[in-house]
Image 1 (tube, rainbow over the protein chains, first blue to last red):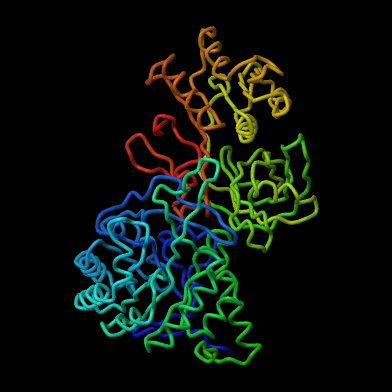
Image 2: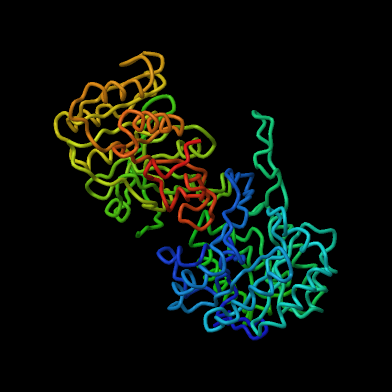
Length: 300
Length: 264
């Protein structure tokens, strides 16, 4: 029998399939559709110190095999996250990963501190260092290794939970950024977040989105994501969590072969809520057939 | 609210007019759980990625034996793909989703539908158990777009029609019919339901408030929005509330008390 379990620092996952932040709400919304206990982990909706209302509509636009989004990081804020959302997941046996975002290093640190107090439930913290949709934050962090180091170092000081740096693909070169994450103590890197794109409404002669640019996700971005995973995994020793356009088990295998230790399922959750469960089964079947014993055996 | 993700067999798929289709699937779990006003997310491209997202369609009716039907108009790529499916094929359907209309006593309601927005109102009318004389007002662009009239008439409803070009019924807007009803009906029903274009629902809301006053106006509207997931995780289907917050059409709706909505 193949062993699908993996380790990311002190974090043990029963399998390498995690639902990506922003595509599984606060987890509980999916309870009728999939067995949450079968998942390796759940990366919950990104949380900020204060609630965020998100952007005015339109927030999404479908593209060829892809999806542009400009949600604007809508979330209930850390207080309601802790008091209302987290308790709903207490009876589930999957790894809960909180995703956080802020306008300054100080905000990330404060959020990590608050979440650390709930380490009975939260097993890791993922830092959103990349969201391109919010004017006042996001993109600046993701492109600057110094700012990233500052956030990771600060967060590591206030929590013993494993820290995952989620990186943006909207950079010239991922290697210095991945290296900065490793050097400042990140336990893992997850990538990629959405690719910056846009769409034009030709009849109104206007961009579709109020913010002009939006984040592209879905099967269309998989080859780009795979390239980033390859580059990052060859540049650093810490585990890489591959994200980007994974909708079938074959996609997941490609990511493991490119150097990912685990993967996240994002946009596929929208059009096929069972994608994650099907992918876990598919990985297991492939490993059995090909004689792989561990996930890492698949790495090229 | 319980929902199901099923591969449902298409039992029939009929083209009613140039671009209006009636789709019926066998989906017993969905049929049993469904309430008027709820919707389903339908994958219209099989295992392919184009179009990528499912399409939300309101439940038109449920039938004995576990059948669910959808009445839809082909307006874009998604509905075009859907229209090419044939009876005997399978469709991936997630539902029932969202909240539902409140069921009120038949003598106290007026149902108002515009265009293809009439689709979920037939299900509502069936559950309300119409009595002779219960009023339904339907508005369409022209005779070609008219649908569901027989469905309401079968339920003994007094069905009044308006078309913008006058090709059937009253020539003009549905609000003309509604104003007439309000002005000439001494014991006017208390509860109003609408489904249709945003602009039409806005006009109906304004009219009801104008004629009856904010306090006596009880209007439930069913809204439409672009959606990716239908289950409250993608947060894309927002509409603005009067208090400034965003409401999620898939989870907080699709049925809303009209007073909650910012009718901009």
